[in-house]
Image 1 (spheres, rainbow, N blue to C red):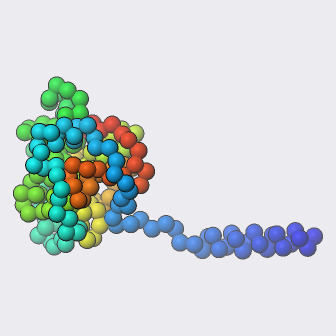
Image 2 (tube, rainbow, N blue to C red):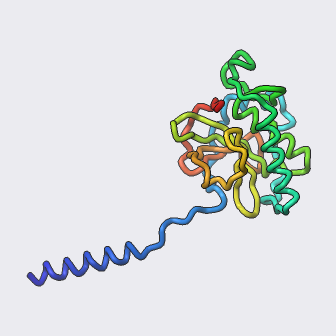
Image 3 (cartoon, one colour):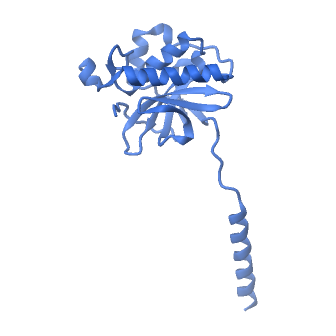
Amino acid sequence: MRIKGVFVAFAAIVAMSSSAMPAPQKTASMTIGSVTSQPIGHYEFCERHTDECGPTRNTGPADMNSAAWDLVKEVNLRVNKTITPATDMEVYGQEEYWEYPKTAGDCEDFALLKRKLLIQSGFSAANLLMTVVRKPDGEGHAVLTLRTKQGDYILDNLEDEVKIWYKTPYSYLKRQASYNAGRWVTIENGNDVLVGAVK
């Protein structure tokens, strides 16, 4: 009986201590893992745009002010409203063709154009990272990650609001390395996924 009483008391202490433990906190920035495979569409994009896929000067996350945030939000909204969603097959006649869109494109084309416009506006390429995610339905998708001192924010063709990464509905798989636009690194689980979401 005494052993049973000790066991019950011990179980109660464990239950109380585990319920008092804080829940895991969301971190403002993604946790980056090891170097991983580059999406084939991005590899072929780099073959055509070699000047955009080499080492970058990584000076750390962007220090954002209100004018910089306004510009980011404006670029995200403008590209989302002016480019018509369409599959690579519809636009280019082939699967997984990453390119700057002229009038139509799919998720990675939107992200590439936003990246280009923000780099032209003075943002560092090291802080504008093409990112592969998985949507809740399991479909692959591409977004643009903006690295800031406040955390990692997402520019998405499926969402007009720029959000911190953990407030989006996605599983994050991999993204461009901040030190080299032609290299990719894992994010948390690092699973491979096909990219090609429209809407």
